[in-house]
Every structure is written in C-alpha cells, then in structure tokens.
Length: 194
Image 1 (tube, one colour):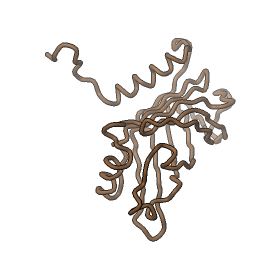
Image 2 (cartoon, helix red, strand yellow):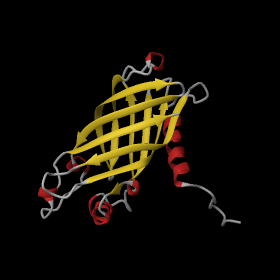
Image 3 (cartoon, one colour):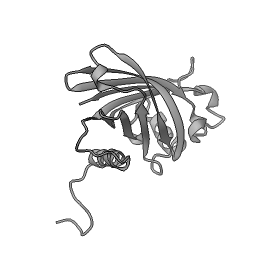
C-alpha cells in the first residue's frame, strides 16, 4: 500500500497525456462531442551541425500529442531527457549545461491548425500552417510553422520542418564551442495520430 497522497502505478506518459488533455479541457470546448487523435510515440529530430565538426544531432520517439478533429487545436509535450544523441557526452552537456533538463524537464507546444477541416484530408499530403506557442527551458515563443497533414482510415499523419535558434529560448552556447554548433537549429516532426 502506498503512502497517503502518493498514487502508485502512474507513468510519465500518463502524466504527459493528462497534461495535454487538461489543456484541451481548459480551452473551454466540451470533450464529449469531439474526436481526438492521439500519439505517445511522436518523432522529433533536431540538428545543429556545422561542417567539419562533430555532428550535433538528436531525436526522440516518445513525444505525446493530441489533435482535436472538431476544432484543429493541437498540443504536444516531450520530455527533454528523451532526446538521444550519437555521442553520450554531447547528450550529457545538452541536458546539464544547455537546456538544464532537471529544472526544465519538458518542452510543450500548443496551437491551432489554420483552416483545418478533417473532411478534406485524404491519402495525399495537404499543406497547412499551425500557429501557437512553443515553450522550451521556461521561455515561450510564438510560432507559425508549416505542416502537412494526410489521413488514412483512423490515422492522421502530421509532419513539419522548421528552424529556430537557441537564443530564442535563452539557451546560451559557450564561446569555446560556439563555432561547432549551428546558429539555426533544424527541427523535423513526424506524428502518427490515432
């Protein structure tokens, strides 16, 4: 039996999904009348490599996301420590020195897909824009990024590619490695929502 006030059997994924659902509830839209598409295995890849230096490349396959098919509202959460680098020391520096993932354990995006209409989606990718807010390391920035959507049976595939900069989110790159990390970070997203 667990201690009072502590629930056993709660997973990080369950907590993240609960936070995403809480966002949608707080948006003031009744959940009973909506169809939601969800994933807990979304892929996010980022790269900030500079030619002639060691590759700065990381990915995760455990981002959680939810799409409200009635409204086009979209939310996603990812644990920063879920990003994997090819070089373990680079992963350690990323978590401890750059994004301070113990203090800021997750990144979150909340937004709306402009002109979203689930009835118009099919097997062919359609281009949309999603506007919202991305929060990393406690800093929130407005974002307007391109996405492609396609639907096959009960799955919606959302893909996006965009760039951002570490300084947009208060991430300081020490002078000793500044020339080894690109000023712009390329981000690729691939979510299969069911």
